[in-house]
Length: 191
Length: 141
Image (cartoon, rainbow over the protein chains, first blue to last red):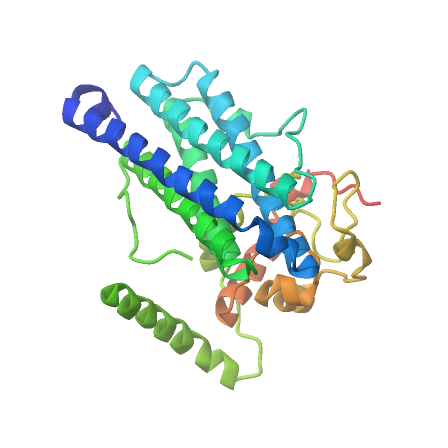
Protein backbone atom coordinates (compact mmCIF):
# COMPACT_ATOMS: atom_id res chain seq x y z
CA UNK A 1 0.00 0.00 0.00
CA UNK A 2 1.25 3.42 -0.88
CA UNK A 3 1.07 4.79 2.66
CA UNK A 4 4.28 2.89 3.31
CA UNK A 5 6.01 5.44 1.10
CA UNK A 6 5.53 7.88 3.94
CA UNK A 7 7.72 5.74 6.16
CA UNK A 8 10.68 5.44 3.81
CA UNK A 9 10.81 8.78 2.03
CA UNK A 10 12.58 11.43 4.12
CA UNK A 11 11.66 14.07 1.56
CA UNK A 12 8.00 13.26 1.95
CA UNK A 13 8.29 13.42 5.72
CA UNK A 14 10.10 16.73 5.55
CA UNK A 15 7.47 18.04 3.20
CA UNK A 16 4.76 16.85 5.58
CA UNK A 17 6.41 18.55 8.53
CA UNK A 18 6.71 21.70 6.48
CA UNK A 19 3.06 21.38 5.48
CA UNK A 20 2.01 20.90 9.10
CA UNK A 21 3.92 24.01 10.08
CA UNK A 22 2.32 26.00 7.30
CA UNK A 23 -1.16 24.78 8.11
CA UNK A 24 -0.58 25.92 11.67
CA UNK A 25 0.06 29.37 10.33
CA UNK A 26 -3.07 29.11 8.22
CA UNK A 27 -5.18 28.27 11.23
CA UNK A 28 -3.67 31.12 13.17
CA UNK A 29 -4.85 33.36 10.36
CA UNK A 30 -8.28 31.79 10.56
CA UNK A 31 -8.35 32.32 14.29
CA UNK A 32 -7.63 35.99 13.84
CA UNK A 33 -10.35 36.26 11.26
CA UNK A 34 -12.86 34.48 13.45
CA UNK A 35 -12.19 36.67 16.42
CA UNK A 36 -12.08 39.78 14.30
CA UNK A 37 -15.62 39.04 13.14
CA UNK A 38 -16.99 39.22 16.64
CA UNK A 39 -18.02 42.87 16.76
CA UNK A 40 -19.71 42.89 13.38
CA UNK A 41 -21.70 39.83 14.29
CA UNK A 42 -22.74 41.11 17.65
CA UNK A 43 -24.45 44.04 15.94
CA UNK A 44 -26.67 41.82 13.87
CA UNK A 45 -28.62 39.51 16.15
CA UNK A 46 -30.53 37.44 13.61
CA UNK A 47 -27.63 36.96 11.22
CA UNK A 48 -25.31 36.38 14.15
CA UNK A 49 -27.58 33.69 15.56
CA UNK A 50 -27.63 31.95 12.20
CA UNK A 51 -23.84 32.07 12.00
CA UNK A 52 -23.54 30.69 15.52
CA UNK A 53 -25.81 27.77 14.56
CA UNK A 54 -23.61 27.00 11.56
CA UNK A 55 -20.48 27.20 13.70
CA UNK A 56 -22.02 24.91 16.29
CA UNK A 57 -22.92 22.30 13.69
CA UNK A 58 -19.33 22.46 12.43
CA UNK A 59 -18.07 22.14 16.00
CA UNK A 60 -20.19 19.03 16.55
CA UNK A 61 -18.69 17.42 13.47
CA UNK A 62 -15.15 18.40 14.48
CA UNK A 63 -15.62 16.87 17.94
CA UNK A 64 -16.82 13.67 16.33
CA UNK A 65 -13.79 13.68 14.01
CA UNK A 66 -11.48 13.98 17.02
CA UNK A 67 -13.18 10.95 18.57
CA UNK A 68 -12.97 9.04 15.29
CA UNK A 69 -9.22 9.61 15.00
CA UNK A 70 -8.87 8.57 18.65
CA UNK A 71 -10.66 5.35 17.82
CA UNK A 72 -8.29 4.80 14.91
CA UNK A 73 -5.22 5.63 16.98
CA UNK A 74 -6.25 3.20 19.71
CA UNK A 75 -7.33 0.46 17.33
CA UNK A 76 -3.89 -1.11 17.15
CA UNK A 77 -4.39 -1.34 13.39
CA UNK A 78 -2.27 1.64 12.34
CA UNK A 79 1.42 1.24 11.58
CA UNK A 80 3.77 3.82 12.99
CA UNK A 81 3.96 6.39 10.14
CA UNK A 82 0.22 6.15 9.56
CA UNK A 83 -0.48 6.48 13.27
CA UNK A 84 1.63 9.65 13.35
CA UNK A 85 -0.32 11.02 10.42
CA UNK A 86 -3.65 10.20 12.07
CA UNK A 87 -2.58 11.96 15.25
CA UNK A 88 -1.45 14.99 13.25
CA UNK A 89 -4.83 15.19 11.56
CA UNK A 90 -6.56 14.71 14.90
CA UNK A 91 -4.49 17.63 16.18
CA UNK A 92 -5.81 19.79 13.34
CA UNK A 93 -9.37 18.88 14.24
CA UNK A 94 -8.65 19.76 17.85
CA UNK A 95 -7.44 23.18 16.70
CA UNK A 96 -10.55 23.61 14.55
CA UNK A 97 -12.78 22.66 17.48
CA UNK A 98 -10.96 24.97 19.85
CA UNK A 99 -11.27 28.02 17.65
CA UNK A 100 -14.88 27.25 16.73
CA UNK A 101 -15.77 26.82 20.38
CA UNK A 102 -14.07 30.05 21.42
CA UNK A 103 -15.71 31.98 18.60
CA UNK A 104 -19.18 30.64 19.40
CA UNK A 105 -18.71 31.67 23.02
CA UNK A 106 -17.45 35.12 22.06
CA UNK A 107 -20.51 35.57 19.85
CA UNK A 108 -22.75 34.83 22.80
CA UNK A 109 -23.59 31.28 21.82
CA UNK A 110 -23.18 28.08 23.77
CA UNK A 111 -20.66 25.74 22.17
CA UNK A 112 -21.85 22.15 21.90
CA UNK A 113 -19.87 19.77 24.06
CA UNK A 114 -18.33 16.51 22.96
CA UNK A 115 -20.69 13.58 23.40
CA UNK A 116 -19.96 11.06 26.11
CA UNK A 117 -20.02 8.37 23.49
CA UNK A 118 -19.90 8.33 19.69
CA UNK A 119 -21.13 5.55 17.51
CA UNK A 120 -18.73 4.39 14.81
CA UNK A 121 -18.88 1.45 12.39
CA UNK A 122 -16.37 -0.53 14.44
CA UNK A 123 -17.55 -3.87 13.06
CA UNK A 124 -16.20 -2.90 9.66
CA UNK A 125 -12.82 -1.62 10.90
CA UNK A 126 -10.61 -4.70 10.67
CA UNK A 127 -7.50 -3.44 8.92
CA UNK A 128 -5.43 -0.29 8.57
CA UNK A 129 -7.00 0.30 5.17
CA UNK A 130 -10.49 0.11 6.74
CA UNK A 131 -9.52 2.80 9.26
CA UNK A 132 -8.02 5.00 6.56
CA UNK A 133 -11.08 4.58 4.36
CA UNK A 134 -13.36 5.48 7.25
CA UNK A 135 -11.29 8.58 8.00
CA UNK A 136 -11.29 9.52 4.32
CA UNK A 137 -15.10 9.25 4.25
CA UNK A 138 -15.38 11.66 7.17
CA UNK A 139 -12.86 14.09 5.68
CA UNK A 140 -14.56 14.05 2.29
CA UNK A 141 -17.87 14.78 3.97
CA UNK A 142 -16.26 17.58 5.95
CA UNK A 143 -15.05 19.23 2.75
CA UNK A 144 -18.62 19.25 1.42
CA UNK A 145 -20.02 20.42 4.74
CA UNK A 146 -17.68 23.41 4.89
CA UNK A 147 -18.21 24.07 1.19
CA UNK A 148 -21.93 24.22 1.88
CA UNK A 149 -21.41 26.45 4.91
CA UNK A 150 -19.08 29.03 3.38
CA UNK A 151 -21.72 30.79 1.24
CA UNK A 152 -24.35 30.92 3.99
CA UNK A 153 -22.35 32.78 6.62
CA UNK A 154 -23.56 36.33 7.00
CA UNK A 155 -20.13 37.44 8.14
CA UNK A 156 -17.46 37.17 5.46
CA UNK A 157 -14.67 36.76 8.02
CA UNK A 158 -16.37 33.62 9.27
CA UNK A 159 -16.79 32.40 5.70
CA UNK A 160 -13.09 32.98 5.10
CA UNK A 161 -12.16 31.10 8.26
CA UNK A 162 -14.46 28.21 7.31
CA UNK A 163 -12.81 28.12 3.89
CA UNK A 164 -9.44 27.91 5.63
CA UNK A 165 -10.62 24.85 7.56
CA UNK A 166 -12.09 23.44 4.35
CA UNK A 167 -8.65 23.60 2.75
CA UNK A 168 -7.16 21.67 5.63
CA UNK A 169 -9.87 18.97 5.45
CA UNK A 170 -9.33 18.66 1.70
CA UNK A 171 -5.62 18.06 2.25
CA UNK A 172 -6.44 15.37 4.83
CA UNK A 173 -8.76 13.69 2.35
CA UNK A 174 -6.23 13.77 -0.46
CA UNK A 175 -3.45 12.33 1.71
CA UNK A 176 -5.72 9.58 3.05
CA UNK A 177 -6.74 8.68 -0.51
CA UNK A 178 -3.10 8.59 -1.50
CA UNK A 179 -2.35 6.32 1.44
CA UNK A 180 -5.08 3.98 0.22
CA UNK A 181 -3.53 3.87 -3.24
CA UNK A 182 -6.36 5.90 -4.73
CA UNK A 183 -6.02 8.96 -6.94
CA UNK A 184 -5.42 11.68 -4.31
CA UNK A 185 -7.39 14.39 -6.06
CA UNK A 186 -10.08 12.70 -8.13
CA UNK A 187 -11.66 15.79 -9.65
CA UNK A 188 -11.02 19.42 -10.45
CA UNK A 189 -14.02 20.62 -8.46
CA UNK A 190 -15.71 19.61 -5.21
CA UNK A 191 -19.36 19.67 -4.31
CA UNK B 1 -6.21 36.49 -8.69
CA UNK B 2 -7.51 37.11 -12.20
CA UNK B 3 -7.00 33.42 -12.95
CA UNK B 4 -8.95 32.52 -9.83
CA UNK B 5 -11.76 34.86 -10.78
CA UNK B 6 -11.85 33.32 -14.22
CA UNK B 7 -11.99 29.85 -12.78
CA UNK B 8 -14.79 30.77 -10.41
CA UNK B 9 -16.71 32.33 -13.26
CA UNK B 10 -16.26 29.07 -15.14
CA UNK B 11 -17.65 27.12 -12.22
CA UNK B 12 -20.60 29.47 -11.99
CA UNK B 13 -21.28 29.00 -15.69
CA UNK B 14 -21.02 25.25 -15.36
CA UNK B 15 -23.43 25.27 -12.43
CA UNK B 16 -25.87 27.49 -14.30
CA UNK B 17 -25.68 25.29 -17.37
CA UNK B 18 -26.32 22.22 -15.25
CA UNK B 19 -29.46 23.61 -13.67
CA UNK B 20 -31.02 25.31 -16.67
CA UNK B 21 -32.60 22.26 -18.35
CA UNK B 22 -34.18 21.12 -15.09
CA UNK B 23 -35.57 24.59 -14.44
CA UNK B 24 -37.20 24.60 -17.87
CA UNK B 25 -38.98 21.33 -17.16
CA UNK B 26 -41.41 21.11 -14.27
CA UNK B 27 -41.59 17.32 -14.23
CA UNK B 28 -39.35 15.87 -11.54
CA UNK B 29 -36.34 14.18 -13.11
CA UNK B 30 -35.99 10.46 -12.52
CA UNK B 31 -33.43 9.88 -9.82
CA UNK B 32 -30.55 7.46 -10.21
CA UNK B 33 -29.75 5.78 -6.86
CA UNK B 34 -26.22 4.91 -7.96
CA UNK B 35 -25.45 8.54 -8.78
CA UNK B 36 -27.19 9.47 -5.54
CA UNK B 37 -24.85 7.25 -3.53
CA UNK B 38 -21.94 9.39 -4.72
CA UNK B 39 -23.83 12.53 -3.77
CA UNK B 40 -24.58 11.07 -0.35
CA UNK B 41 -20.81 11.16 0.31
CA UNK B 42 -21.31 14.91 0.77
CA UNK B 43 -23.59 14.22 3.74
CA UNK B 44 -21.22 11.89 5.59
CA UNK B 45 -19.55 14.49 7.77
CA UNK B 46 -22.77 14.73 9.73
CA UNK B 47 -25.14 11.90 8.80
CA UNK B 48 -25.30 8.12 8.73
CA UNK B 49 -28.08 5.85 7.58
CA UNK B 50 -28.58 3.78 10.71
CA UNK B 51 -27.59 6.02 13.60
CA UNK B 52 -27.60 9.62 14.75
CA UNK B 53 -24.48 11.75 14.46
CA UNK B 54 -24.24 15.55 14.20
CA UNK B 55 -27.36 15.09 12.07
CA UNK B 56 -30.12 12.53 12.56
CA UNK B 57 -30.20 9.07 10.99
CA UNK B 58 -31.68 8.63 7.53
CA UNK B 59 -33.14 5.16 7.98
CA UNK B 60 -36.87 5.56 8.49
CA UNK B 61 -36.79 8.98 6.88
CA UNK B 62 -39.71 8.60 4.47
CA UNK B 63 -42.99 9.28 6.22
CA UNK B 64 -41.22 10.54 9.33
CA UNK B 65 -42.20 13.89 10.82
CA UNK B 66 -39.26 16.31 10.80
CA UNK B 67 -37.61 16.68 14.17
CA UNK B 68 -39.05 13.48 15.57
CA UNK B 69 -36.20 11.01 16.04
CA UNK B 70 -36.27 10.21 19.72
CA UNK B 71 -33.19 11.34 21.60
CA UNK B 72 -31.82 13.52 18.81
CA UNK B 73 -31.33 17.18 19.66
CA UNK B 74 -33.05 19.16 16.90
CA UNK B 75 -33.29 22.89 16.37
CA UNK B 76 -36.59 24.39 17.50
CA UNK B 77 -37.20 25.41 13.89
CA UNK B 78 -36.99 21.81 12.71
CA UNK B 79 -39.26 20.57 15.49
CA UNK B 80 -41.83 23.26 14.64
CA UNK B 81 -41.70 22.77 10.89
CA UNK B 82 -44.54 20.20 10.71
CA UNK B 83 -42.88 18.72 7.66
CA UNK B 84 -43.34 15.06 6.87
CA UNK B 85 -40.44 13.78 4.81
CA UNK B 86 -41.19 12.48 1.34
CA UNK B 87 -39.63 12.99 -2.08
CA UNK B 88 -41.34 16.34 -2.53
CA UNK B 89 -40.54 17.82 0.88
CA UNK B 90 -36.96 16.52 0.70
CA UNK B 91 -36.52 18.09 -2.73
CA UNK B 92 -37.71 21.43 -1.38
CA UNK B 93 -35.55 21.24 1.74
CA UNK B 94 -32.39 20.04 0.01
CA UNK B 95 -32.56 22.84 -2.55
CA UNK B 96 -31.98 25.40 0.19
CA UNK B 97 -32.27 24.14 3.77
CA UNK B 98 -31.89 27.53 5.42
CA UNK B 99 -34.62 29.04 3.26
CA UNK B 100 -36.94 26.04 3.62
CA UNK B 101 -36.61 25.96 7.41
CA UNK B 102 -35.07 29.19 8.72
CA UNK B 103 -33.31 28.38 11.95
CA UNK B 104 -32.37 24.82 11.01
CA UNK B 105 -29.04 23.65 12.36
CA UNK B 106 -28.18 22.33 8.91
CA UNK B 107 -26.07 25.29 7.88
CA UNK B 108 -25.67 24.18 4.32
CA UNK B 109 -26.27 26.05 1.10
CA UNK B 110 -28.13 23.15 -0.45
CA UNK B 111 -28.01 21.21 -3.69
CA UNK B 112 -28.96 23.57 -6.49
CA UNK B 113 -29.07 20.98 -9.23
CA UNK B 114 -32.49 19.35 -9.44
CA UNK B 115 -31.22 16.13 -10.99
CA UNK B 116 -28.65 15.76 -8.21
CA UNK B 117 -31.42 16.17 -5.63
CA UNK B 118 -33.51 13.56 -7.43
CA UNK B 119 -30.52 11.20 -7.47
CA UNK B 120 -29.90 11.71 -3.77
CA UNK B 121 -33.55 11.15 -2.89
CA UNK B 122 -33.61 8.00 -5.05
CA UNK B 123 -30.56 6.76 -3.17
CA UNK B 124 -32.18 7.48 0.19
CA UNK B 125 -35.34 5.65 -0.91
CA UNK B 126 -33.29 2.65 -1.98
CA UNK B 127 -31.22 2.74 1.20
CA UNK B 128 -34.37 2.86 3.31
CA UNK B 129 -35.46 -0.41 1.74
CA UNK B 130 -32.06 -2.01 2.38
CA UNK B 131 -31.41 -4.65 5.07
CA UNK B 132 -29.28 -2.08 6.95
CA UNK B 133 -32.29 0.19 7.38
CA UNK B 134 -34.84 -2.58 7.83
CA UNK B 135 -33.03 -3.94 10.86
CA UNK B 136 -32.30 -0.45 12.21
CA UNK B 137 -34.60 0.90 14.92
CA UNK B 138 -36.56 4.04 14.06
CA UNK B 139 -37.41 5.54 17.44
CA UNK B 140 -39.75 8.52 17.11
CA UNK B 141 -40.96 11.00 19.65
